[in-house]
Length: 263
Image (cartoon, rainbow, N blue to C red; front, side, top):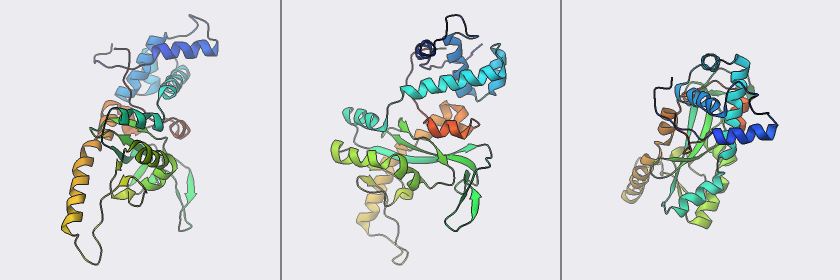
């Protein structure tokens, strides 16, 4: 029994996915609606996949397969970044907020060579002191996430991840839609249309009043938008610690979308 109210837009799309795969009606252990509920429980409650599947009468292998199918269907519905930015501009918002977060994950054995020539764990994040995935997100000024990137290993810096996945679209939005971006000091030097606070000079020891006022205004505007990750991780608890395959999270961005069914 699902004792809470929650929504997810999957059943209709799952039915279309089954038709595309040539699955005959009545051939699946779960209906499209029950498969959607199964995915919803995993996202909302962060319960073990095998245990949740057992409660619905399916095997562990089938549970993982049904979950992967539901994630594929959700990812296929997501807007790309350019479409999301156009929607925000069309709603007359003044700016967007760029933020990054390292989401905890299981320990991974993948390694890479650091800038110092040392072999390090690719998914270990010095930012958090643990293994995780670096995710970039763009939020409306009120904090609603409108787009998230595919993940990078936790060792990747926010600015490096942003250059790979998001900055090109933000430059376009700033020049074509007149939609600037606000970001924290970790994105300093990101480029046109991305506004970050000016750091205190190491020699002077203080900033002039005009620059301090600018920094204060930027932070006051940005703070509301930066609650986007709190909304994502608070609503979809499975994102608090990702246990799925990195190959899956590296090809499917996270999404926060309205939905059509109520459980």
